[in-house]
Length: 368
Ligand SMILES: Cc1cc2nc3c(=O)[nH]c(=O)nc-3n(C[C@H](O)[C@H](O)[C@H](O)COP(=O)(O)OP(=O)(O)OC[C@H]3O[C@@H](n4cnc5c(N)ncnc54)[C@H](O)[C@@H]3O)c2cc1C
Image 1 (cartoon, rainbow, N blue to C red):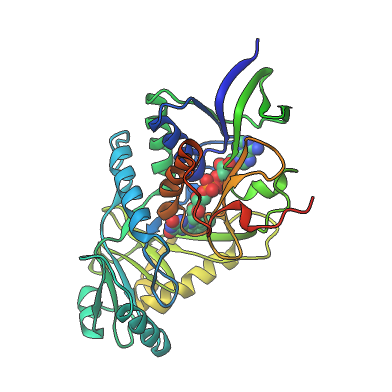
Image 2 (cartoon, protein in one colour):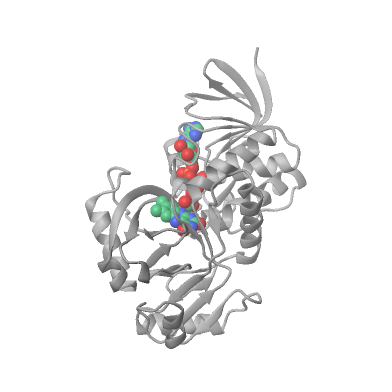
């Protein structure tokens, strides 16, 4: 017998789980299907930042306040479902590494209205007082609100939270048969069981472009590698994370930290490699030369981000196929935008609230 459901979501990363959560909050029935393990895509990164001041100028991100509130509340909610502490509000230091960077950062800071307590300009001496030995030219930013997240562990706990809320999550199952059943229903075959879903959402990260429905989307794929380092010297301890050229995510209580990330536009596979390690070492050295001297790489990881022409995610219903949706293009801000935009999309679907023009799928031409 066929099984009928309101929503079937493909993908168990930040996008897929956040959409499932937003639906469940409105008591809408859904099923999540992940072809590998939860968080096996880009959302498995061992150290990610919620950084509202991005790019070399430290520009306040689009919808930073809403995005931040959504992820901060979600992390707190989900933490309850894990024995491991997977995030910290440990603040973020943004030292300017060269003069042009300092000038642009300061200019940006002075012309931005930051919420109270989010962001402070610090002189070079103040930055070096917070972090002795750090490279800094003429000041930088201190963001006490910065969050550091072990995203992979967050995903595992998020899946547990959703399952306890009554959502079924099927993992290690790649649904090969996906067809339009009628003009407004979708048929998905999973291990011989036929699922008839009213809505089908692709939250499939960089795999989205591989499907015939979404191959026309202007998504760029960017491989990113991160390395886990172990410090050999206790005197080099620090508790905050750092964003300068790349980032240094500090999460555990021990001697390790994560250095990210490479931005590789041409790549043949999604494996970490020696070039990646060497690049990350150079990045670390640029920010903290002494730390680079006294740390060794103990692990390395790689994933693929999806980026769009305006660097904003993509949300929407297919222009030709009814009830077929997509949520991808989260770029390097999956944490900041995942939960906020999942809520936005479900509100759009249930209350007909228009989508923000910057993220709507209809900003792209469809020429089949
Ligand atoms: C190195 C690196 C560092 C990063 N650092 C940060 C950071 O500091 N802060 C931040 O906010 N973001 C960061 N990001 C970005 C963030 O990780 C992504 O934006 C986010 O994880 C994307 O989530 P997603 O759910 O769209 O995609 P994914 O996590 O890739 O999830 C897609 C899932 O869909 C599954 N799937 C694919 N096809 C199918 C199918 N047909 N059926 C079922 N399942 C399918 C895949 O197996 C995968 O699990 C980083 C990314 C990388 C690579």
